[in-house]
Amino acid sequence: MSTIEAVIFDLDGTLIDSEPVYYEADKRLMNELGLPLTEEMKHEFVGCGNLQMMTILKERHRIPDSMESLLERKEHYYLELARKHMEVFPEMKKFVESLAQKGIPMAVASGSGPDLIRELLEQVKLKEYFTELVSSEEVEKGKPHPDVFLLTARKLNIKPERLLVIEDSVYGVLAAGRAGMLCAAIPSILTDPLPTEYYQADLLFDEGMSGFSAAKILAWMENGAPGNVN
Image (cartoon, rainbow, N blue to C red; front, side, top):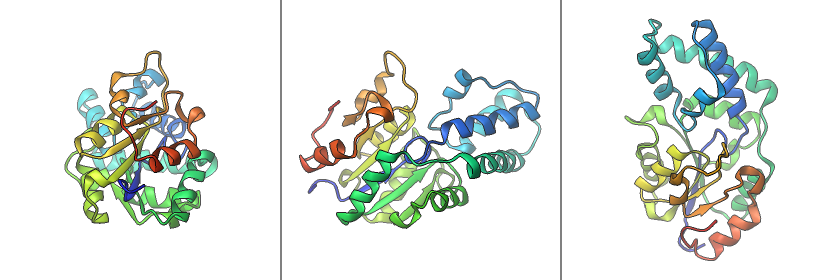
């Protein structure tokens, strides 16, 4: 694994099975505001940070409520549901534990808020594995811009080209590429065909999390992380 010095994980849909929970939280908030939200509409925002998503919806629907109020209510609904229904993807947990045994530093770079990231990782008993927890709310622009990954690289004090990003969304794959980092993509929403952006990843699990294997990605890393493999 000489080319990879650390691994950066997205949180939602990558480490934890949170997308269905986020959908329910968003639906509650939108219903409260008298606005519809279908699963197809929600797909537009997979990989977006909470701030970015609510900014778009507030402008699009001319929502009068303050951004602070919208974010607080969304987080409240999300945590209420997450405390009952959140799970770690088993193979992803195995991958994290394997990296820890090998002494490879890990970080989380997510669109969720910093307090939410911390609470969720504590809830699923993963927080101890991560050196840095970074939120898109700490940077000017969220994914697909590279800002959150570049900030994470600075906090880790590791060059971008020596970092591997694990992502589930198109926005995340684009952000990792723009940051000059390697990327392994595990699509959380499977379509036929997949969006072409996923094929920009260096390693693609085109069957999503059901096809993800800790053993496969570790072997790929040990083989020097060759590009554009699926």
